[in-house]
Image 1: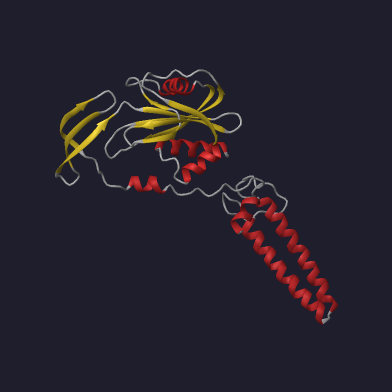
Image 2 (image 1 turned 135 degrees about the horizontal axis):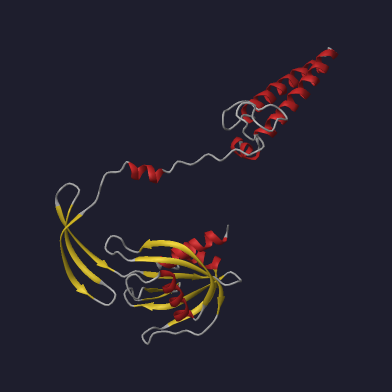
Length: 284
């Protein structure tokens, strides 16, 4: 409660209110004590207590955030450092736990000793390496190299998201996903690729694009990185699917998709991440 009150007060307003309350309580206490009756004496004691609390409030909340000097009532700048007291105190900076942890962390880098290519496919390239571990011993690493990919959260004017329904052979399931696709070549511009995939898979184009970040899909065994975007200002057109590509397109309310992610109905990783990030941004 005190933190909430402090965030709403400026040192100037705290000093003014504290001083005014102190003077009013003292005057009432003097008037009560002068009556010299039991009831008024009690009121005088109460007013004296209020005056003490007003001073405590003034001295605690009415300090200059720069130098700590107690603010003078009705003075807009600190008497010592000239800091503007009508300015609300800056919120306390939260410690960056991750940055501190990384700064003091040990080096866990694994160094390649040998590398062997096992398979060179259209999408995947498999390797088997021998690496040197941080303790000096060696071990084997099997992993996949990938050109990278993009995905898009296309948001309509009425708050729906354009999603796709398609069959994924590797898991044997028909899944709900946001539009996505791999890069055509190494070094391809990611935003251009996202615009291409949105148009080809759904037929939509967009006026506004927001970068949502990147994520590694399975860093334990693959270097695939997906760049995520949110597309707004949509214009509907015709799909341009590949001959071996079959998918249905539907518009679903964003909140319904968030619920589907949280309840486990949508299990695709890029869709989960993209939907939750877009929802966080649009709710601000």
